Image (cartoon, rainbow, N blue to C red; front, side):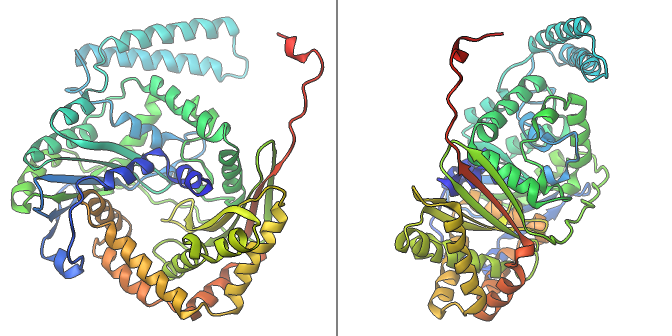
Length: 518
């Protein structure tokens, strides 16, 4: 349960949907080698900078795609947290041609709506807001919102895809990227090109403030109302003092209450430029036939200026840090260590540590804490948290058994880390890791959607989809000496952040409090 919750908090709801989508359109794969894919993969870059990867896989008359936008919460700055996720929601609201009964009238209504909201927000955020004026301006905003809503055709974008045989329509926002994906019959490639180019060429920010309320409710449900959600948010904010990884993907509540349609439009114009997007198309398609369609539709999008990179680099941690939350819930223990980014040569070593410690019932943490000592009901680790693109953390966690303290669990986890530092892992453990890691990666390539996601991801991060297969070579090269070296370099007290929930019995309300009111 805790591992599931951590993945949810790190990557958001759409990542869970991705698991289901990867299972769609699965095709029995034979060889999964670089040589095989080089013969049927074409990379085409439009003049405006948009990169397309086309993989011809004529197994069944369908295709899947994934568009990776190289922007996530790490590109946000204080005051606008949550905007990357917010625009992901807006990308489903349609265009001037989709989702409206009268776009010309709707555009005028949206302009009036934004003017009304800005006036209300200016008064609300002033040093001495006038309550009566605030009520008047809020009423004006609500009337303008009702007027704009008159022209909305709800969910028309998704309805078109459903009607044309599409499946798996979804998206996801994380710290490092925003991803859009679904599958269609192979005779719908031109429809795909039209729809996807339209929503990034002419997005319409209809129902923006209504959708912002939905996102605020997501935050309440998944962070503020969940002990684990509150712990992880505080843990990340403690572990990172400078890098924007410290910011929650969903955004801070005060920012969500204040980010405007204008803010979202500016964010879109800055980051949704063709050179910042990679789209992978996999299935029953031919590159020679698809490329002219891509040129026709996606070529309409203006090149724009490539966004500036993230400037802030997280400084080395120089002191152990601890965050403790008192809560009437079960205890939870989390411990993390700063490490390099996914592109660092040592990333496969961290993946090996993650696997050896926490891959199922053979993992060392499970055997020591759950099976043998019965200190925990669940335990595990992540080799990259909360993101991967920039320097991040190796994370370990455990949910103590009833009556067991966090400190007892802490001692058991650190004993296993000390073993990694002092002793070579066995040849059998290392071999199992390599076998499992290769099998997992190759399994992800069996379906059109899984392959599209992997290729777009590696093209975005490494600049070459072939790195999917070269990573297998890097896995093979990991040695027991590498694991000891990395463990000794990384698992140091000064590089450690600890987070824990300590169970606190809820205090009974004072006599008569239940009947009080204001």
